[in-house]
Image 1 (spheres, rainbow, N blue to C red):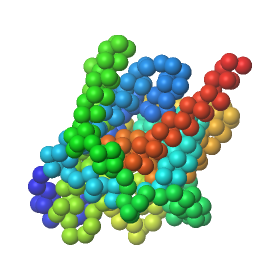
Image 2 (cartoon, one colour):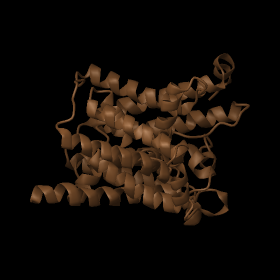
Image 3 (tube, rainbow, N blue to C red):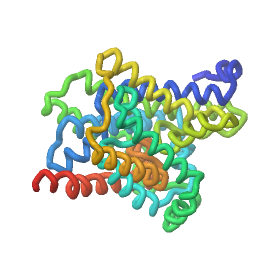
Image 4 (cartoon, one colour):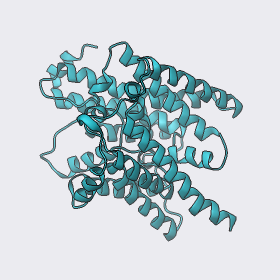
Length: 351
Protein backbone atom coordinates (compact mmCIF):
# COMPACT_ATOMS: atom_id res chain seq x y z
CA UNK A 1 0.00 0.00 0.00
CA UNK A 2 1.76 3.11 -1.25
CA UNK A 3 0.38 6.04 0.70
CA UNK A 4 3.48 8.24 0.41
CA UNK A 5 2.03 10.44 -2.39
CA UNK A 6 -1.03 11.13 -0.24
CA UNK A 7 1.11 11.99 2.80
CA UNK A 8 3.32 14.29 0.75
CA UNK A 9 0.30 16.05 -0.71
CA UNK A 10 -1.83 16.73 2.40
CA UNK A 11 0.57 16.08 5.31
CA UNK A 12 0.93 13.41 7.98
CA UNK A 13 -1.66 14.67 10.48
CA UNK A 14 -4.44 15.24 7.92
CA UNK A 15 -3.70 11.79 6.49
CA UNK A 16 -4.07 10.24 9.94
CA UNK A 17 -7.39 12.05 10.43
CA UNK A 18 -8.54 10.93 6.96
CA UNK A 19 -7.69 7.32 7.81
CA UNK A 20 -9.67 7.68 11.04
CA UNK A 21 -12.59 9.07 9.05
CA UNK A 22 -12.49 6.14 6.61
CA UNK A 23 -12.33 3.61 9.44
CA UNK A 24 -15.15 5.37 11.24
CA UNK A 25 -17.47 5.53 8.23
CA UNK A 26 -17.06 1.79 7.59
CA UNK A 27 -17.63 1.07 11.27
CA UNK A 28 -20.64 3.40 11.52
CA UNK A 29 -22.44 1.96 8.50
CA UNK A 30 -21.76 -1.64 9.50
CA UNK A 31 -22.64 -1.15 13.18
CA UNK A 32 -25.89 0.65 12.39
CA UNK A 33 -27.06 -1.92 9.87
CA UNK A 34 -26.02 -4.97 11.92
CA UNK A 35 -27.31 -3.60 15.28
CA UNK A 36 -23.92 -4.51 16.78
CA UNK A 37 -24.08 -4.08 20.58
CA UNK A 38 -22.05 -5.80 23.29
CA UNK A 39 -24.62 -4.83 25.93
CA UNK A 40 -27.39 -6.64 24.03
CA UNK A 41 -25.13 -9.67 23.56
CA UNK A 42 -24.29 -9.90 27.27
CA UNK A 43 -27.97 -9.65 28.22
CA UNK A 44 -28.89 -12.48 25.85
CA UNK A 45 -26.10 -14.61 27.27
CA UNK A 46 -27.00 -13.76 30.87
CA UNK A 47 -30.58 -14.86 30.21
CA UNK A 48 -29.50 -18.18 28.72
CA UNK A 49 -30.02 -17.36 25.05
CA UNK A 50 -27.75 -17.47 22.02
CA UNK A 51 -29.83 -15.06 19.97
CA UNK A 52 -29.19 -12.62 17.11
CA UNK A 53 -27.32 -10.00 19.22
CA UNK A 54 -24.92 -12.60 20.58
CA UNK A 55 -24.42 -14.00 17.09
CA UNK A 56 -23.67 -10.56 15.64
CA UNK A 57 -21.12 -9.86 18.37
CA UNK A 58 -19.42 -13.23 17.90
CA UNK A 59 -19.22 -12.77 14.13
CA UNK A 60 -17.78 -9.28 14.54
CA UNK A 61 -15.24 -10.52 17.06
CA UNK A 62 -14.18 -13.49 14.92
CA UNK A 63 -13.99 -11.42 11.73
CA UNK A 64 -11.66 -8.90 13.38
CA UNK A 65 -9.53 -11.74 14.70
CA UNK A 66 -9.26 -13.38 11.27
CA UNK A 67 -8.45 -10.16 9.39
CA UNK A 68 -5.96 -8.78 11.91
CA UNK A 69 -4.15 -12.04 12.57
CA UNK A 70 -4.12 -12.82 8.85
CA UNK A 71 -2.62 -9.41 8.07
CA UNK A 72 0.03 -10.00 10.72
CA UNK A 73 0.97 -13.36 9.22
CA UNK A 74 1.22 -11.81 5.75
CA UNK A 75 3.50 -9.03 7.03
CA UNK A 76 0.96 -6.30 6.33
CA UNK A 77 1.22 -5.13 9.95
CA UNK A 78 3.00 -6.03 13.17
CA UNK A 79 0.78 -6.59 16.19
CA UNK A 80 3.63 -5.73 18.54
CA UNK A 81 3.59 -2.17 17.17
CA UNK A 82 -0.05 -1.59 18.13
CA UNK A 83 -0.56 0.98 20.89
CA UNK A 84 -2.16 -1.43 23.35
CA UNK A 85 0.65 -3.95 22.88
CA UNK A 86 3.58 -1.54 22.89
CA UNK A 87 2.90 0.04 26.29
CA UNK A 88 2.69 -1.23 29.84
CA UNK A 89 -0.72 -2.76 30.49
CA UNK A 90 -2.67 -2.69 33.72
CA UNK A 91 -4.21 -5.88 35.07
CA UNK A 92 -5.90 -4.01 37.90
CA UNK A 93 -7.22 -1.43 35.45
CA UNK A 94 -8.56 -4.16 33.20
CA UNK A 95 -10.39 -5.84 36.07
CA UNK A 96 -11.74 -2.80 37.91
CA UNK A 97 -12.30 -0.67 34.83
CA UNK A 98 -13.87 -3.54 32.94
CA UNK A 99 -16.32 -4.25 35.75
CA UNK A 100 -17.25 -0.56 36.09
CA UNK A 101 -17.67 -0.20 32.33
CA UNK A 102 -19.87 -3.30 32.20
CA UNK A 103 -22.13 -1.87 34.90
CA UNK A 104 -22.37 1.46 33.09
CA UNK A 105 -23.02 -0.21 29.75
CA UNK A 106 -26.18 -1.87 31.05
CA UNK A 107 -27.40 1.24 32.87
CA UNK A 108 -26.87 3.43 29.79
CA UNK A 109 -28.47 0.79 27.55
CA UNK A 110 -25.49 0.65 25.24
CA UNK A 111 -21.70 0.87 25.21
CA UNK A 112 -19.94 4.06 24.14
CA UNK A 113 -19.63 2.93 20.53
CA UNK A 114 -23.31 1.98 20.39
CA UNK A 115 -24.29 5.37 21.85
CA UNK A 116 -22.33 7.13 19.11
CA UNK A 117 -24.05 5.05 16.43
CA UNK A 118 -27.49 5.69 17.96
CA UNK A 119 -26.83 9.42 18.32
CA UNK A 120 -26.46 9.66 14.55
CA UNK A 121 -29.91 8.10 14.08
CA UNK A 122 -31.63 10.88 16.04
CA UNK A 123 -31.55 9.29 19.49
CA UNK A 124 -31.25 12.29 21.83
CA UNK A 125 -30.79 9.99 24.84
CA UNK A 126 -27.62 8.69 23.19
CA UNK A 127 -26.48 12.24 22.38
CA UNK A 128 -26.72 13.39 26.01
CA UNK A 129 -25.24 10.17 27.40
CA UNK A 130 -22.43 10.29 24.84
CA UNK A 131 -21.51 13.85 25.81
CA UNK A 132 -21.46 12.92 29.50
CA UNK A 133 -19.29 9.91 28.64
CA UNK A 134 -16.81 12.09 26.68
CA UNK A 135 -16.54 14.67 29.48
CA UNK A 136 -15.89 12.05 32.16
CA UNK A 137 -13.39 10.29 29.89
CA UNK A 138 -11.53 13.58 29.47
CA UNK A 139 -11.62 14.18 33.23
CA UNK A 140 -10.15 10.71 33.71
CA UNK A 141 -7.49 11.24 31.06
CA UNK A 142 -6.26 14.75 31.89
CA UNK A 143 -8.60 16.08 34.60
CA UNK A 144 -8.97 15.92 38.35
CA UNK A 145 -9.92 12.20 38.33
CA UNK A 146 -6.60 11.32 36.68
CA UNK A 147 -4.60 10.71 39.90
CA UNK A 148 -7.23 8.26 41.16
CA UNK A 149 -7.28 6.45 37.82
CA UNK A 150 -3.48 6.26 37.75
CA UNK A 151 -3.43 4.89 41.28
CA UNK A 152 -5.87 2.12 40.46
CA UNK A 153 -4.09 1.31 37.21
CA UNK A 154 -0.72 1.12 38.99
CA UNK A 155 -1.83 -1.50 41.53
CA UNK A 156 -0.96 -4.37 39.18
CA UNK A 157 0.80 -3.85 35.85
CA UNK A 158 2.29 -6.04 33.14
CA UNK A 159 5.98 -6.87 33.19
CA UNK A 160 8.81 -5.63 30.95
CA UNK A 161 7.13 -2.38 29.91
CA UNK A 162 4.71 -3.85 27.38
CA UNK A 163 1.48 -5.79 27.25
CA UNK A 164 1.19 -9.56 27.23
CA UNK A 165 0.82 -11.34 23.89
CA UNK A 166 -1.35 -14.36 24.61
CA UNK A 167 0.08 -16.36 21.71
CA UNK A 168 3.59 -15.95 23.09
CA UNK A 169 2.66 -16.58 26.71
CA UNK A 170 0.64 -19.69 25.88
CA UNK A 171 3.37 -20.89 23.46
CA UNK A 172 0.94 -21.22 20.60
CA UNK A 173 1.96 -21.12 16.93
CA UNK A 174 1.81 -17.85 15.02
CA UNK A 175 -1.29 -19.05 13.19
CA UNK A 176 -3.10 -19.82 16.46
CA UNK A 177 -5.01 -16.54 16.51
CA UNK A 178 -6.18 -16.98 12.93
CA UNK A 179 -7.30 -20.53 13.66
CA UNK A 180 -9.26 -19.36 16.71
CA UNK A 181 -10.96 -16.71 14.60
CA UNK A 182 -11.99 -19.26 11.97
CA UNK A 183 -13.45 -21.58 14.62
CA UNK A 184 -15.41 -18.76 16.26
CA UNK A 185 -16.68 -17.60 12.87
CA UNK A 186 -17.93 -21.13 12.24
CA UNK A 187 -19.81 -21.08 15.54
CA UNK A 188 -21.28 -17.67 14.71
CA UNK A 189 -22.48 -18.84 11.27
CA UNK A 190 -24.05 -21.94 12.81
CA UNK A 191 -25.94 -19.79 15.31
CA UNK A 192 -26.91 -17.37 12.56
CA UNK A 193 -28.52 -20.21 10.62
CA UNK A 194 -30.28 -21.45 13.73
CA UNK A 195 -31.64 -17.94 14.40
CA UNK A 196 -32.61 -17.54 10.74
CA UNK A 197 -30.70 -14.29 10.42
CA UNK A 198 -30.54 -12.46 7.09
CA UNK A 199 -27.41 -12.61 4.98
CA UNK A 200 -27.17 -8.81 4.88
CA UNK A 201 -27.10 -8.51 8.65
CA UNK A 202 -24.27 -11.04 8.75
CA UNK A 203 -22.36 -9.12 6.08
CA UNK A 204 -22.64 -5.90 8.06
CA UNK A 205 -21.68 -7.69 11.30
CA UNK A 206 -18.52 -8.85 9.56
CA UNK A 207 -18.06 -5.28 8.36
CA UNK A 208 -17.63 -4.05 11.93
CA UNK A 209 -14.74 -6.46 12.41
CA UNK A 210 -13.35 -5.52 9.00
CA UNK A 211 -13.35 -1.85 10.03
CA UNK A 212 -11.06 -2.71 12.94
CA UNK A 213 -8.61 -4.36 10.56
CA UNK A 214 -8.78 -1.38 8.19
CA UNK A 215 -7.83 0.97 11.01
CA UNK A 216 -4.82 -1.13 11.93
CA UNK A 217 -3.64 -1.50 8.33
CA UNK A 218 -3.96 2.21 7.56
CA UNK A 219 -2.22 3.45 10.70
CA UNK A 220 0.54 0.85 10.28
CA UNK A 221 1.09 1.95 6.67
CA UNK A 222 1.28 5.56 7.84
CA UNK A 223 3.79 4.66 10.55
CA UNK A 224 6.06 3.15 7.91
CA UNK A 225 6.37 6.39 5.90
CA UNK A 226 5.94 9.07 8.56
CA UNK A 227 8.85 11.14 9.84
CA UNK A 228 7.15 11.57 13.21
CA UNK A 229 6.14 8.59 15.40
CA UNK A 230 2.65 7.37 14.52
CA UNK A 231 0.54 5.29 16.87
CA UNK A 232 -0.69 2.06 15.29
CA UNK A 233 -4.30 1.85 16.46
CA UNK A 234 -7.85 1.24 15.37
CA UNK A 235 -11.44 1.66 16.53
CA UNK A 236 -11.93 2.55 20.17
CA UNK A 237 -14.09 5.26 21.70
CA UNK A 238 -12.89 6.22 25.18
CA UNK A 239 -9.70 8.11 24.37
CA UNK A 240 -10.92 9.27 20.93
CA UNK A 241 -14.13 10.71 22.42
CA UNK A 242 -12.09 12.71 24.92
CA UNK A 243 -9.59 13.82 22.24
CA UNK A 244 -12.34 14.81 19.81
CA UNK A 245 -14.06 16.85 22.52
CA UNK A 246 -10.83 18.73 23.24
CA UNK A 247 -10.18 19.23 19.52
CA UNK A 248 -13.52 21.01 19.26
CA UNK A 249 -12.84 23.14 22.35
CA UNK A 250 -9.13 23.94 21.90
CA UNK A 251 -7.95 25.55 18.66
CA UNK A 252 -4.36 24.47 19.35
CA UNK A 253 -5.26 20.77 19.07
CA UNK A 254 -3.94 18.89 16.04
CA UNK A 255 -5.54 16.47 13.66
CA UNK A 256 -4.98 12.78 14.35
CA UNK A 257 -6.58 9.39 13.75
CA UNK A 258 -8.81 9.69 16.82
CA UNK A 259 -10.22 13.03 15.70
CA UNK A 260 -11.27 11.54 12.35
CA UNK A 261 -12.65 8.32 13.83
CA UNK A 262 -15.50 9.70 15.96
CA UNK A 263 -17.00 11.98 13.27
CA UNK A 264 -16.55 9.13 10.79
CA UNK A 265 -18.66 6.75 12.86
CA UNK A 266 -21.33 9.42 13.29
CA UNK A 267 -21.34 10.15 9.55
CA UNK A 268 -21.49 6.46 8.59
CA UNK A 269 -24.37 5.74 10.95
CA UNK A 270 -26.23 8.88 9.81
CA UNK A 271 -25.91 7.88 6.17
CA UNK A 272 -27.06 4.33 6.86
CA UNK A 273 -30.05 5.38 8.97
CA UNK A 274 -31.10 8.05 6.48
CA UNK A 275 -30.93 5.78 3.45
CA UNK A 276 -32.96 3.10 5.24
CA UNK A 277 -35.41 5.68 6.64
CA UNK A 278 -34.60 4.71 10.21
CA UNK A 279 -33.59 8.22 11.30
CA UNK A 280 -36.04 9.60 13.83
CA UNK A 281 -35.77 11.76 16.93
CA UNK A 282 -36.15 9.98 20.26
CA UNK A 283 -35.77 11.29 23.80
CA UNK A 284 -35.70 10.06 27.37
CA UNK A 285 -38.78 8.12 28.40
CA UNK A 286 -38.89 9.73 31.85
CA UNK A 287 -36.74 11.27 34.57
CA UNK A 288 -35.73 7.89 36.00
CA UNK A 289 -34.54 6.75 32.59
CA UNK A 290 -32.46 9.91 32.25
CA UNK A 291 -30.80 9.41 35.65
CA UNK A 292 -30.04 5.80 34.80
CA UNK A 293 -28.52 6.64 31.42
CA UNK A 294 -26.37 9.48 32.72
CA UNK A 295 -25.13 7.38 35.64
CA UNK A 296 -24.18 4.66 33.18
CA UNK A 297 -22.37 7.17 30.98
CA UNK A 298 -20.32 8.42 33.94
CA UNK A 299 -19.32 4.87 34.88
CA UNK A 300 -18.39 4.05 31.29
CA UNK A 301 -16.28 7.20 30.93
CA UNK A 302 -14.19 6.38 33.98
CA UNK A 303 -14.23 2.60 33.58
CA UNK A 304 -13.27 2.71 29.91
CA UNK A 305 -10.32 5.00 30.55
CA UNK A 306 -9.17 2.88 33.50
CA UNK A 307 -9.49 -0.34 31.50
CA UNK A 308 -7.50 1.14 28.62
CA UNK A 309 -10.41 0.96 26.21
CA UNK A 310 -14.15 0.51 25.80
CA UNK A 311 -16.19 -2.49 24.68
CA UNK A 312 -14.84 -1.95 21.16
CA UNK A 313 -11.33 -0.84 22.08
CA UNK A 314 -10.72 -3.81 24.35
CA UNK A 315 -13.44 -6.21 23.27
CA UNK A 316 -12.69 -6.20 19.55
CA UNK A 317 -9.70 -4.01 18.65
CA UNK A 318 -7.42 -5.03 21.53
CA UNK A 319 -8.62 -8.62 21.67
CA UNK A 320 -7.99 -9.09 17.93
CA UNK A 321 -4.25 -8.68 18.48
CA UNK A 322 -4.48 -10.99 21.51
CA UNK A 323 -3.41 -8.41 24.08
CA UNK A 324 -3.69 -9.95 27.54
CA UNK A 325 -5.23 -6.97 29.33
CA UNK A 326 -7.80 -6.54 26.55
CA UNK A 327 -9.09 -10.09 27.00
CA UNK A 328 -9.20 -9.64 30.77
CA UNK A 329 -11.04 -6.31 30.43
CA UNK A 330 -13.52 -7.90 28.03
CA UNK A 331 -14.17 -10.74 30.47
CA UNK A 332 -14.65 -8.22 33.29
CA UNK A 333 -17.09 -6.21 31.17
CA UNK A 334 -19.17 -9.33 30.61
CA UNK A 335 -19.20 -10.09 34.35
CA UNK A 336 -20.13 -6.51 35.27
CA UNK A 337 -22.86 -6.34 32.62
CA UNK A 338 -24.43 -9.71 33.44
CA UNK A 339 -24.40 -9.02 37.18
CA UNK A 340 -26.01 -5.61 36.68
CA UNK A 341 -28.66 -7.04 34.36
CA UNK A 342 -29.53 -9.65 36.99
CA UNK A 343 -29.62 -7.24 39.94
CA UNK A 344 -31.25 -4.26 38.22
CA UNK A 345 -33.40 -5.54 35.37
CA UNK A 346 -34.16 -9.23 35.84
CA UNK A 347 -35.08 -8.93 39.52
CA UNK A 348 -37.24 -5.88 38.79
CA UNK A 349 -39.16 -7.83 36.14
CA UNK A 350 -39.51 -10.79 38.50
CA UNK A 351 -40.84 -8.52 41.24
